[in-house]
Amino acid sequence: MYCSYYHSSICHPLTRSLTQPQIEPSKSNLFFPTKFKFWGRSSMSPTPTPRAGAGAGSVSGYGADYSEQLLGTQRKQKRQSVAGIDQDELLDPEMLADADSCFCNFKGVQIHHKICHEEEEEEQQEAHHSIQLHSSHPSTSVAKKIGLPMVLLHGFGASVFSWNRVMKPLSQLVGAKVLSFDRPAFGLTSRVSFMEHSSSSSEDSAPLNPYSMAFSVLATLSFIDLLAAEKAILIGRHSAGCLVAVDTYFEAPERVAALVLIAPAILAPIVPQNPFVRIWKALSNFCMHIVKVAMQMMKGMMDMVRTLYRKALSAILRSTFAIVLVRMIIDKFGIPAIRNSWCDANQINDHVLDGYTKPLRVKGWDKALLEYILAMVTDSASEPKPPLANRLTEISCPVLIITGDKDRIVPSWNAERLSQAIPGSNFELIKNCGHLPHEERVEEFLLAVEKFLWKVFGTQEQILQATA
Image (cartoon, rainbow, N blue to C red):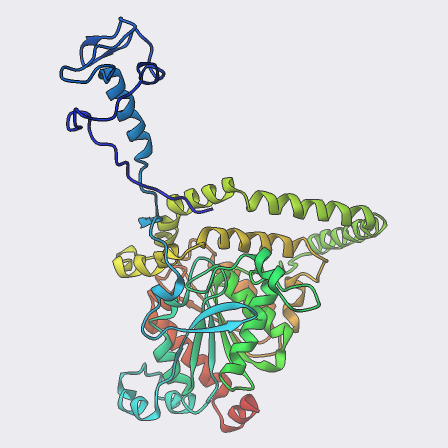
């Protein structure tokens, strides 16, 4: 629901012409008790005194003037803004695109993305500007010969903008294209209504929710095809981006050459440290088994409850109240959340704030965000899948986990514990850094990625194996 605002065209009573249309006395007194005073004059008499010079039967006393002024004030609604963005002037995503922005249609959704590819000549000219590692190995020359493209996956509340400072250096590191795209509900990707999208779908099977995790996974694989590559390195940023990267690996492990997870909000499993923890885990598994048996016995009833739950939740999140509420939440907590993501708040300038709040100028951003939340909740309430924490040991591709030691959103110990749960993974802790290493500590982040690329693809045999 879009709110429209307008300015009243009623003039001030002192500037209004005395030859205005005649007003019936009974209509002008409907709004006011007879014992009120206006501008020091009593209105005790039942009939207002006509103005001097007014025609016969023309009654426009102070009460009538005040009533019209009050109505004009009510019509003059205050222009609404969210996080400093005027909500009366929302635009189509294409109107907000940058010079290097691209759009492509994927399953009825116009996905905004950017591609960076440094030409070999330009790379050689700027080689001396790249970050140098220890002289024990010429990592830069080797990493540039990998030829594996990268797909960058942003997190919740972010967009392509968050990768602006690292896209070009990463392209130089791998000697290939680097692509980042805005997932539905974020950035400049079109906001579509799932109801309209599903009704217009020509597929025989159930339509794919553009705000679901499955859609983001398929879109990621589609962009790997767009890069004309068999494999790609996926870099995911905190919660949603890391989940998309990991789920893409589980969907098509042969298409993922390596994973780089930045401040991942993936709950790492607790490694048993003593016999009491093992006993507790065994009892928990036994209880879960009993619950599963009971759930199977009540499957029919649970399906009905699940359906009613989804319908009720859909009705609530698609209501006008939910739209007003999400605007209030973003307006109150949006900017503070951005500032809380940095360790050094001095790096947050107007350019950063403008980049993060720009999607709030897109038409339908509030409805799309609610659709994303609805899809996220209903995905978790759908048919049970093995917990992600139980599948981490199945990841066999090279993995790098990067986090900041001053991360106030996802604690660094969770990232370290996650690296211990993934066999053979690499862990990098960046000092004096918050939740966004690739934005706050760009050089340290690129250094960590370059070291990882050297370690994984440092020999010609490893390069050939990765690109095969």
